[in-house]
Structures are given as C-alpha cells and as structure tokens.
Amino acid sequence: MGIFTRFRDIISSNISAMLDKAEDPEKLIKLMIREMEDTLVEIKASCAGVMATTKKVQRELEQMEERSTYWEDKAQLAVSKGRDDLAKEALVEKRKYTERRETLELELAEHDSLVLQYQEDIQQLEEKLKSARDKQRVLVQRHIHAKRRKRAQEEIRRVDSSDVVLKFEELENRIERMESEADLVNFAKKTTLEEEFDKLTVDDEIEKELQDLKEK
Image (cartoon, rainbow, N blue to C red; front, side, top):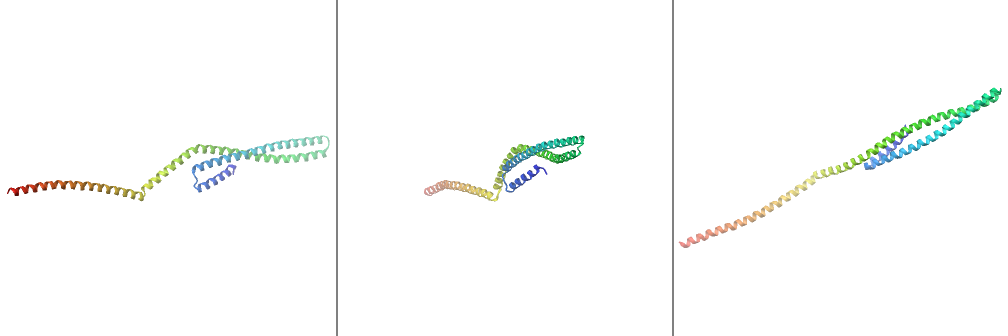
C-alpha cells in the first residue's frame, strides 16, 4: 500500500464524515483540495527525508567499500611478505566491512524503492489535484444553479399545494361575489328609473281618462 493510498483513506474518511453531516458541497470541494494539498506537502517532505537518508547510506556504503578494499590490499601485502598471521587478521577486518557493505546495499535498495514509490504517489496526487482545481469552478457553479433550481421547484410545489389552491379559489369566489353585487346595484338603479317612466305614462293615461269623463 502506497503512502498516497493511506492518505487517501484519511481524506475519504473526512469527506464521508462531512457528507453524513450534509455539509455545503462548496465547503466539501475546498476541503478536498486543501486535504490533497496538505497530503502533497506531507508526501514531498517524506520523500525528501528518504532521499537525504539515501545519500547518507550511499556515502557510508562507499566508505565500507573503501575499507574493504583497503584490508584486502593489506592481506595481499602480508601474504607477499610471508605473514599469514597478519593476512588472516586483515581478512577478518575486511569481512566486517564487507558484511556492513552488504547490509547497506540492501538498505539502499529499500530506500530507492521507497523514493520511487513516493515519486509515483506525488505524480498521481499532483494530477488529481490539478483535475480537482480545474473542476472546482464548474462544480461550484453547478451547485449554485442546483440550489436556485431547488428553490424554484419548492416554490412551484408550494403554489401547487392544496392550501394555496383553496386560497386562490376563495379569492376568485370573493371577486365573483363583488361583481355580482355590482351588477345588482346597476340592476336596481335601472329598475327604479323604468318605474319612474312607467309612472309618467300611467299619469298621462289617467289624466286623459279624467278629461274624457269631464267632456261627457
């Protein structure tokens, strides 16, 4: 498991916790980018530490090789002088440095592998961070539009609710009653005026009838 994978698990845990709390998506996006940036800093720092240690191991390895070669030369010199006893002691010293050199070589190989893994994790995370930054603006705009659309849909549902419909019907009925009352007022006024004219006609007829009686 890479270092980035472990950090990714931590990030996923944090994001999941925020999602469970129904946090603002814009805050989530910013948090994800900040987490990735922090993770990138951590990985680069760890990689730099391993690289520094690798250089230290490399220097020590070179010293062990030099010392091993030194005692091998001493052993050859002792043999050439017929001092097998000194040659054996020199070879013992050589073996100590040789064993240490082998240990350092294994350690160096592990460090090289770890640095390579860090570099792959850094590259992967940098690509994801770039992609997240590119998408941030689009996601924020989508979130804004989604909130506005949600409010619009809620308003539509509110208007379509039975209470609102009943209120509109009640208002419509009230207006119709007011219109009817207005028509009644006009009708009453019209009726009174017609009665006045009818009265005039009746009066004329009665006067005429009275005059006819007088003439008789």
